Amino acid sequence: MIIALIIIVFGALAYLAWRKPFWALLLLVALIPFHAFIVTYLTYLFKVSPNQNFWLAFWKEWLLLILILRLIFGAIKNKKFPFKILLLDKLIIALFVLSVLSILWGTKNLTQGIWGLRYDFEFLVIYWIVRALNLERAEIIKLVKVMLGAAAVVVVFGILLAWWLPPNFLERYGYSYALGWSPEISLQSNQVIGSFTEGTARHRIISTLAGPNQLGSYLVIIIALATSLAIFAKGNQVKIFSAFLALASLISLYYTYSRSAWLAVLVSILLIVGFWLGRKVIWFSLVLIGFLLIAWGLSRMGALGNWFEVVLSRDSTTGHWEGIIKTWQAIKNHPLGLGIGRAGPLTLRFPQNGVLVNESWHWQILTEVGFLGFGLWIWILVEIYRNLVRIYQKIAEDRFLKSVLVGAIAAFSGLLVHGFFLHTWTDISTVVTMWVLVGVSFGLIENKTAEAKC
Image (cartoon, rainbow, N blue to C red; front, side, top):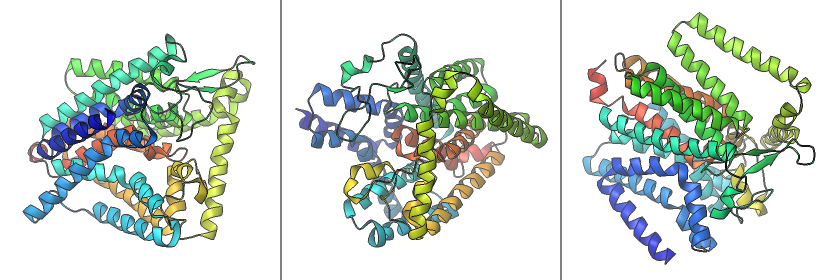
């Protein structure tokens, strides 16, 4: 039964993606925050085998594959790309070629290398797909509404888990209460930090995502976008809904106890305030004050009781430092990198080739493709920022598009910081949500509606 269901769903997704790509994108954005819950529950409900589970979870990659094939077919048919090729696009291709070559000198395992390419380049493919659609203003509005509507469900459910529902609530839907996770077992219903015996235990909520850190990184985007809309967009209804969603998201984010996400949100909000005030001196002062407050708070946390002791989690902090040490030990001996797929959470699937979890997306890239690849990655980030700022300067009068763009810049900046502490771009909900916004923003380069308002 489950095989027939998968075939029917894949056929329907292929048809939708080929004939109605924008609606396929809407479906992806609407369902992606619930992907982990849907797959976990269906696996439990239909007693799905591991092989069937793979195909059950593959729906999103299948949808993206059809969309990218459609893009390639259209480019061949029309003998031109649907968008202007930027330096950024050339850098992405260069990094991809380098990563493929790294399979030969480093990875030496084709399966692991292919998985590594999937993890490291899926978000860049999403950027290309969305940019190629050249969305009009009305479509962007619809897309943002779907994104925030899905997020509202995630946020409310997260608050329910934090305040009212029992910690093991998700176990009735196939989740486990394991102390650790591996690819062979189902997702945890929640994670616990602290000690039950000492009365310091706290449950980290996951809502409908794969874990508290994944929920945290996803909410960074939602908070940045909602805050930007609440400040810059027109219309009281939009402002009020966005403000309430931002506030509720902050509450939900708190109960993830994800320090990386907290820091990322702080960076995002400071950036939005900087855009709002529009004065470089005030903006610099806010950033400086914010980071001074963080430094002061960290220096005082030891004297403020068990809450900080639990949240700071010495084991987790030690893990981050160990990740940096492992990275430099690896890169010192292999300046060209270990090969794509040889670092990060993916190595847990291939333990026979060595497990190396860097606790950082940026260190993962450095470990995999060496100094040359890392330099390309930094250049890619610089080009993204340079183009986003250029687009922001062009969108002069359209307050809605400006609010979306500011939200995208702020969220991307926050997640850039987030990537120093976690493998940010391995979570599909974060990847799709963020890079859809990046693709939409870059699509404004070719968008005639946006240009007409400049």
